Length: 504
Image (cartoon, rainbow, N blue to C red; front, top):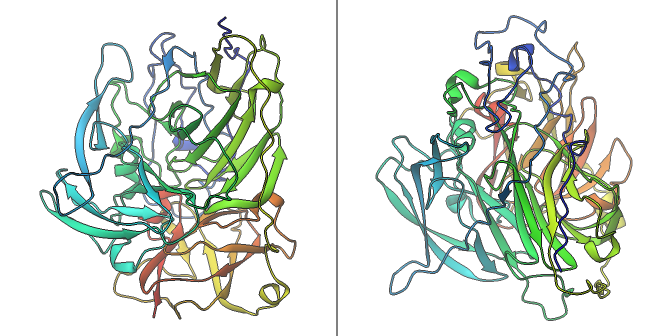
């Protein structure tokens, strides 16, 4: 028996949040051809210098995402295969290509080992692998392993540039808990464009503990990666970043999931695990289900939460991840179901297809974890103060822009310290800034003195910080090297909202 569940027009998600996009981000209402979602108007973007705060918007005019029509089966990124008879285990190649997003048109894109996005790299806890990274683009790039706790020399930050035609072998050791991570480029001043054109891929650290929760784990069947991104296309259906970009974060109206326009997912198992990545340049996403059903968040950026959290929505800023379980056996089989944004736009409709009755899910036992934060950790003094400020190309950290020749902070390997990150408002209110630290998985101690929400009581490498908010982080670096910390609105990062910490 086949049950089809498609989301109706009133579903879905969007999000408010990169709390400041200029009015030039979208001039006029964006419309698209009904079948091809083609833009009828060009974006009227202002790339000049801003002389004050008069262009600082309140983000009420973020372009809405177009709801998925559910006409294309979701593309599942392939698993990266190990090399045979080679002195390295995997190869990742940054390359140019073309992708058909719309009928009758090819869009120039970037990808890893293909035309768009990249394969999923799976590592076991404790496993060490050698990865050959090669640049076949016509511009420099880097390969950053976002969330992986590796030495600074292997991290792939802006100082680790690989020129066109060149390659190198990096050593990656997954010496950390199981988690959903990702990889992407990190060249200074061109990260946003390279990600916008398609460079991103998932990186899993997998459990080896036999006592770990028996979670769905069959890749592409009941364990599904979901890379959510938004894009702008010009009148030629191209990703013309230089003409479409916005210095406060490039936000589009076309929704892509795993690079698929108008996606749907056929569900064949009652309990599904979704590993969600906000891979957008700047958009914040608030995810819900179209039928208002609850789901279970089991993990954040760096691994399992202290305990599962039942919820009916989650918000992720750029680069944040979450793992969720959706129990389809608990839902009416004839109701439309989709993952939506907060506006009710269907981002990913589901088709339920199964024979016979869908069996109820078995209960999942959760490990008895110790306290998320000890009293000793909570009482540690603040040793590093970070101030995020600004908009457009006037963004700074502690009043400074990135200088590759300057070390901003120093911290001893293995020694926990408390970082207090303050998002200083400007005269127009300020922006949400997603704050990311390389080379560590930190704990959130508090938000304005309050303990973190249950779904933030897990290891993280990125954190959404509201204007005027002070967030304290417990930061420990397990390896030595020079690491970046920065706003993960990619245009802000490229505009110098970034610093360097030396771990010794």
